[in-house]
Length: 465
Ligand code: FAD
Image (cartoon, rainbow, N blue to C red; front, side, top):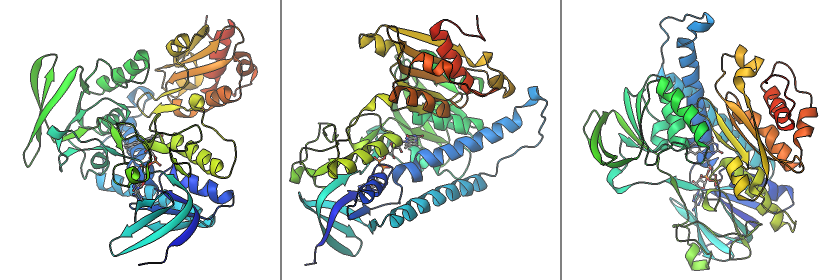
C-alpha cells in the first residue's frame, strides 16, 4: 500500500475549466493538486479552440493572398507548405500549454500526471503506467471534458476522422466530406476550403449552425458556397467505404441515396461528456441519462464536497463557460456566494463572416415575455468595414422597450468575436441602448456599428435612414 497524500482541493483535468479552477482555488488559499492524464491545457489548447483558430488564420492568409484582386493585389504562385503550417500551429499550442504549466506552478499548484479514479467521496487513486497514488481531498472539482461522438457506421480511422484528426492532417485534402454542420464542422470546412479543399457538408436538418438565427447561418452558407463548398441539407449519412486513397460516403438525401467520394470524411456530430470512466457511480454523483453531471448554482454535484464544471455539465460546451464555472466552483469551496448566471455568456463561430451572440435573441426575448426592440445596423454602412473590404453582415441589438435595457445582441461580420465583448459587458452591467449611444466610439472602427445599432434602437441613427 502507499501513503495517501492530503490536499484541500483536487482538480481533475487541466482544460480551461480545470486549470482556471486550480489557479483560483490557490489564490483563495487552498492547497491544490491538479491531475491530468493527457496534455496540459485539455481539448481547448491542444485539439480544440487554439489549433483550429491557427488553421483558420492560415487559411485566411492564403485565401486573401490569392483573392485580393479587387484591391489591386495580384499575388502569383501563392502556395502552401502544409508541414510548415502544422509546425507553426504546434508552436502556438506549445507556447500556451507551457504557459498554463508555468501559471499553475507560479500559483503553487501541484501538477500530477496520471488518470484519476474515485475511491471514495474523499479520495482518488491516480494511476500512471507504473505507479498508483492515493490522494485524500477535502473538496474536488471534476473537469474531465468531452470526447467526439463516434457513430457506429463511421468508426474513426486514418481517413474517417474527427476534429482531432482534421487538425492533425499531413496534407491539404483535395476533397473532404464533412458530416455535421455545427460550429466545429463549419469552422474546419471553412479553413480547408480556404486552403483549396473541395468540401461537401452533409447536414441532417434544414439549417447549418443550428444555435444561430437562420439569417446569420445563411450568410455563412452563402460565403462558403461562393468558395465552392457544396451543402446537402436533410442528409442522413449512412455509411462509409474506405480504400487506401480515399472514402466513399453514402448518404440519404430527402429519401434519395447519394454517394460522395473524397480523400477524408470528417465526422463532427457532437461530443459526449467524459463521465463514464472515473468511478462517479460508486460515490453517488448523479448524472442525467446522457452522462451529464447534475450541479446546483455553485457547480456542486449531488455529493456536497464534489464540484463539476465545463463540458461535463449542462450548457454550451465552450471554453470560456468552463473557465467561468471553474472560478465559481473554487469560490464556492472558499465559502463565497458566487453563483452561475449564463445570460452574458457569448457564443462565437469563427466562420466567414464570424458569428457571435450573447444574451437573448429577438425570438427568445419574445418567448420570455419581453416587449423588445430589435435594432439592426449593417456592416456595409460602416467606413472601417468598407476599408477592410469586408462588408458582409450586420449587428442586431435586442433592447427592452420599457426601460431600454440591452438584453441581447447578435453579430455576423468581420471581428464579431471581438465586438461581442462590448455587448456582454453591456448586459452584465445593466446598460441601456442610450448608454451605448452616448459612448464615444473611435472612427473609423467596427465598434461604431455598436453605437449606431443603439442609435437605431433610439430612433436616431446618423449613418442610415
Ligand atoms: P477539456 O478541455 O476537455 O479538458 C479535460 C481534460 O481532462 C483533458 O485534458 C483530459 O485529458 C483530462 N481528463 C479526463 N479524464 C481524466 C481523468 N480521469 N484523470 C485525469 N485527467 C483526465 N470552445 C470555445 O469556447 N471556443 C472555440 O473556438 C472552440 N473551438 C473548438 C474547436 C474544436 C475543434 C473543439 C473540439 C472544441 C472547441 N471548443 C471551443 C470547445 C472547448 O474546447 C471545450 O468547451 C473546452 O475545452 C472544455 O473544457 P473542459 O475544461 O471542460 O475540458
